[in-house]
Length: 370
View 1 (cartoon, rainbow, N blue to C red):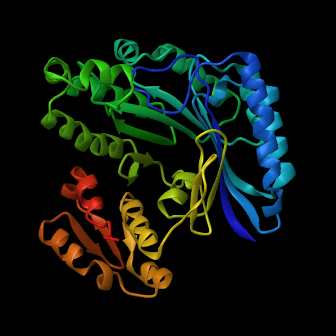
View 2: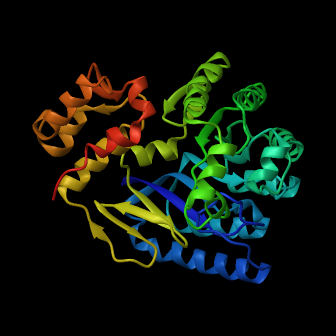
């Protein structure tokens, strides 16, 4: 049987944040219940695969999955376990937002086998949280965190965000150190991106006035770069190592589910907007699968794998594709070495510190012409 990761999408939230472009929205209790029922039917429909795959990780993402009632979470896991064999040591995560969970929900998560929480905090500064449109305060987060520990959760991630309007370098360093001192197992630290279709885009996106406002209110480029560089330094002092461009963990607590994405493991996505990759076919809910060409697979191997700090393995590339990496990417690799954006480390090709700063550019160089 082949390993399979399972992603379950819950597209509901209490209120859209001002920066959020994810497929999520508020919904009534009745709408949420109908969705869960349909979700369970979708999961069971994949029973035809159960003889070929076993589940190695489950990730309940959103939206805000913690908006669901305990009985709805139980129904989802009854459907999963009734359809697929789930490894006894599977990593099973759920995204949680402060202000949407109580002790009963935490107990229900433990009961169904959830062993990892990912808490959306973003900042320890209440003014910044209000600016982002979050529904909670830092004090609400602390209540959620303490509750999770009391209920036995020993694998907790927190999401943090830098580059927030009016945020200073000192503000960001305080958020990092305050969270790190809590002794969490994992920290995801992302920079705010202004996405089309969001309230932030309307305010800061297009037009001369919006650009002027953005220049006035956002940290400048040098400050943002320093924020990123100091993130790794500060978190290293607290025992976290960076294993992916934006992710830091204590030893042994790297997110196995996300590592699967970056390693091009097979995964099945259930629910509105969820994506799947199985047998080199990729699709999202309601769309026809796209069969990935050999060139597509090579591209993904490179630009997904280079997100990992360890980089990409040359021997695995040769094993997967039947040729050496230099046969396909020799000119690109040499150019990136010359520019000090990539380096070799034994069997691995990886980003340098300078390469990490402009990683999107580096990764785009590995796209192949049709």
